[in-house]
Amino acid sequence: MLIVTAVLDGSRLDVTAMIPGVSEDGGVCTLSLAGSAEKSTVTAAAGNGVTYCGVMSVTVPQARESDGSFVVGYVSGTVRAESAPTTLASLR
Image 1 (tube, rainbow, N blue to C red):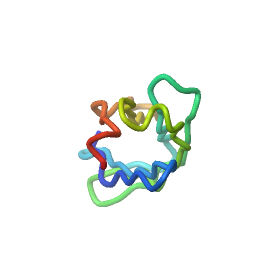
Image 2: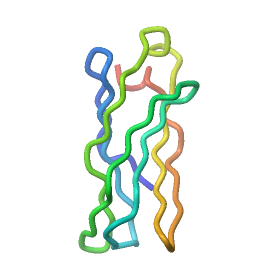
Image 3: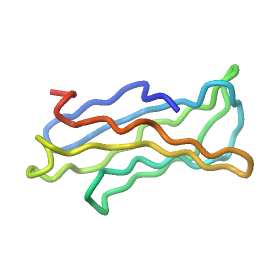
Image 4: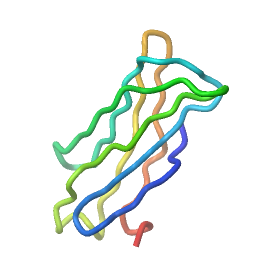
């Protein structure tokens, strides 16, 4: 699972992702902010040899902006995947 874009704009985090080597519709992508109940889900879309996760957005509490991180997970009937954690500080 790869993070394609990650933008921290003020207190809003927008992320897109993809799963290389899998091309299927209907799976669920979830953006999760570590240490927070904030989550965002989108339905995945098949591409040419990849599955795309469209824009997922969460609100980042100001206290988490310097030390927080996020992951994107994907679940379908046949595939489970998760990105490596990405720190919010790396987006500044």
